Length: 407
Ligand code: PMP
Image 1 (cartoon, protein in one colour):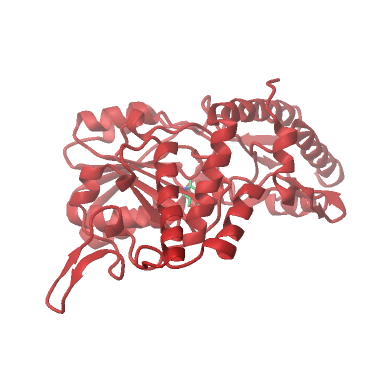
Image 2 (cartoon, helix red, strand yellow; image 1 turned 90 degrees about the vertical axis):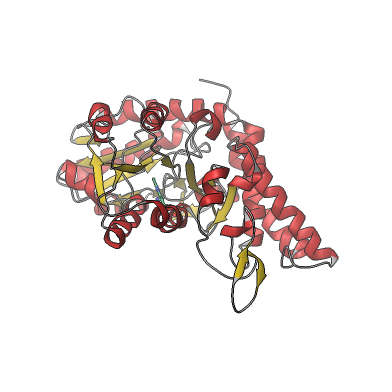
């Protein structure tokens, strides 16, 4: 066991002290959304108490203060993912909005009838539906790289899909339904060798590992703040500067223009060209606070600790008769999806809730993954840096008890 300071971290998350149905909360629904440390809660509260005004347009002190904090958060994101410039960091509502933005700007400008977009069999709906919409609008074709029963991408089949017609690869970095971590560097290199840009859906990967967009050389990287211990309603689109500069804007409105006349408007430069309207000011600053908090702990330390948690949970789960783990990739993040014989995942979720344990039951916005495994839904325990082996023991005892009573 590493000396990861989990006890100290837990104190920073006030909600972890909640009692649920009279029991200590065991929060294992982190892949859906993470809880927030005091650093984030206080940062947001501090904005509204001392720093709040609309940004970018004011000369008064509060507006300057809010603008400085907002732009400082952009630089924190830039450093966190090692982007070359803060101009490459676009604030959006979340990963979903970022994918839609790319589809409707880059996609509409560059993808035509007969062109192909390659995704994988393990995508979240938010990296399927926007491309289907683009295909309907343009006549492009969506191609799906298959996976094996462990939930791993069949790499050769992926590479075989790349051809002259492929105009974009859009791939999940880490699957929310299975935990699979894709070999994204290899995929990016293969796509680039054929001149194809690559977008990574980093919604799940970002809280679990150090991400370096320059080392990966991805063209776009998208994620949501709420899965990174930050606020909901805020997310990030990273794009290489040259690509973003060549893309048309997404939405029109205030803040994204240089000049407006009734005849013609001139757009602002990056990053503001893609940030029409008043943004979620306090939440951007809150995301910056989350990044500072994570930086102090260190993403490598978090990844190592969570790997221990996943190994422990997998081993314990494997010992439970009647439990089937869904998703057994060799490269896997801290997610344990499972089904039980004769007990529906929704019943598992409800019964664990009565013990104070929060897991998710459902299709996890990945219906094609459920179809692949022939299950309507799975139960999913997803771990964060504040979870402990003791909590995993509570989960496993709850599951064992369930099987004894209902299985
Ligand atoms: N991609 C993946 C892999 C996800 O897990 C999620 C959230 N469940 C999303 C995209 C969408 O994120 P959001 O709902 O925050 O936009």
